[in-house]
Image (cartoon, rainbow, N blue to C red; front, side, top):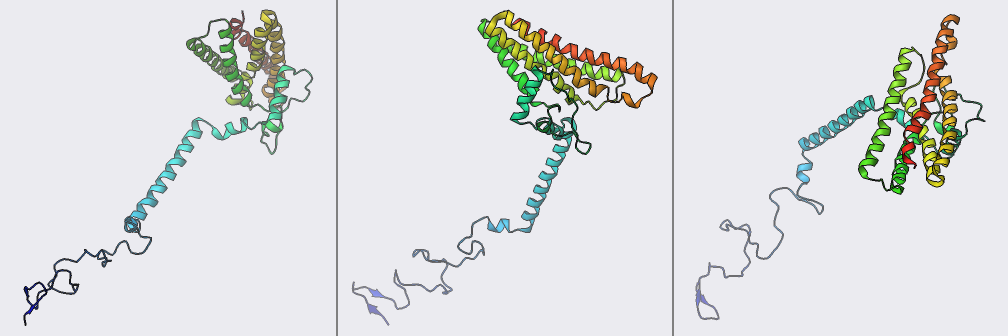
Length: 300
């Protein structure tokens, strides 16, 4: 049946007019109608739910989870191997002991380095065959004072050179490298001497670095006195500090080097005691020499 619309044109009964709603189930429809912006069925099976995101399907994949677990395990194993190899060359666990200090310990230790004459007990305290931390025992060696003393010595040396119009980054670098090289030579020489004398001692290389680094305290005091009071103040102050570090080193190293002498026979003990005593005095006497050598050119 034909009918006529309002415009006067004839319209076939089976032809839909533009804008007429279409049936999605119509088999003759080739494309979905997206003009109305309505929700369409999700044919991919992904992105369902209000919290869905495009990578959710990837993360839920068992292979992805297995790869992430393997990567995490590999990173953990690599970190463990790095820590083990690093601790082999740099004993970090031992270094923590030498930096276990507090303000009270540092103050008492500095006083002991400058005025060691009234101190009686020089033995290191132990707890279950393990030396206690430096903050609990003033006689325990530490690395905090030597490291800070070395840095402060370089800064004071730069200040002294600046007051004499001789400062330059190159000279300051030479000063720092020279002090470090002499420290290494000193420690290596002591280690070689202990080996040649066959001294059985619990001294470690870090202990020797600590005892050799204590002299920077007296060097700093001497240079500052020289800047304030001239060469006379420098020599008097440095002399006091040299005698103090000599006494401190003798009383400290004597217990470390002669600790095994009591377990030996009388004849062997007598011969080795002399060598060990000479070695102790040589180590102590080397401290004032290095103190003067590294500071005399800084005061004019």
